[in-house]
Image 1 (cartoon, protein in one colour):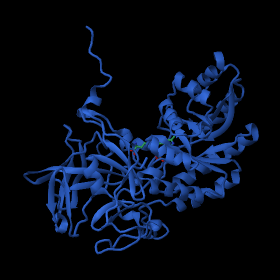
Image 2 (spheres, protein in one colour):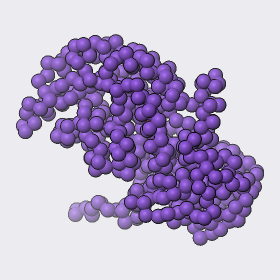
Image 3 (cartoon, rainbow, N blue to C red):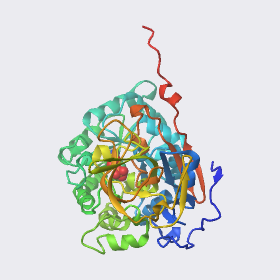
Length: 486
Ligand code: LLP
């Protein structure tokens, strides 16, 4: 699959130092594998400027090493528990990424028939899949039953009845659907309102007070097997307390369900937040020593260890299998979106840097006003040269000037921005920029808005990279459209 070697002779192997690479350190002591070497941003051992030259921009690039490292660190921290990590496919559903995680032993949290199809296509095990979502269709339920998923995470009484009916229907007669009800523990996860899910105001889950009665109904349904209980309180949560509070609230229910129905698992959902503001710096392990609550009162980040320390004792006592559904944690900081500067536009007070990626490629800043760090691919303050798009600009980033700019895309919307009034080293036309923390909820939320073809995706492993999704063409845009016969 990896068909190109892009390591050039000037690129040192991991861990070696060079004049510009004061920040570089051996990859094994890093938290993510994006770092400058020889004055150029690398993903693992691959020079990102070269990848962009070869494949064009906008371009998503993912680090396989970072994804696996996060998975393995989480897995190791949970070792005292009988546990299963079910990667939330919605965060990044490229087949190559799913395969990476399936090979590492992961299960999957899916929310549609399409996601189940992808997992199976990637060689994932349906017996390690949980099927969540508030609006499952008949077709999706049938598909998941036929594939024998581990559990349906059920969000309402109406859905429970529907699953029972489908499991009883025609050729599936007598089949028992494994289910867990999704509990809504009503805690405040202190995150952005659109991605908070565990409070009574959200459409998700069943209030704790209603759970016992619905489980009792489920126990009397002929085609339902009660196998677990699930919750998920929100996404991008950077404090351990909301997780611990939610577990504390649901733990007595888990005990009760275990004694009544012999449930096998408790899924505590996903939601672990990642570092967006200091995304680049947080690649160094030392950064974490300085910025987690163990070292400072003003914690900027939640480490895997802090999360596990806060949750493990209560979980251990329950003596059931613990499922986790992390998405962003595994892939978020393992991906960047590479984009090239097209034009610089100065209007009155403002300076706009117009890049070739748009809100259609990465919608998070437009949709949630979320912050993504943006770094030049050519290291600032470091003598070097870069070429691309047929043009070369020498020694541009020797410039130390910092200026406030808006970094915007070409889409016809004022909301099409990646950064507003952002202090940046001086950027020029044709410069290559990396939008950090773009591995989660990036490509998966991309669209063809403004008839812009979807970007390509690349997976890096060591000193090799592979295209894992081709860039769309203009022809792809009209494929499937049909002239009206009237
Ligand atoms: N489990 C359930 C039931 C979920 O709804 C989600 C995410 C996850 C797990 C994974 O959450 P994570 O570990 O990735 O935080 N588009 C938004 C995020 C939406 C999250 C939806 N549910 C964003 O770009 O921030």
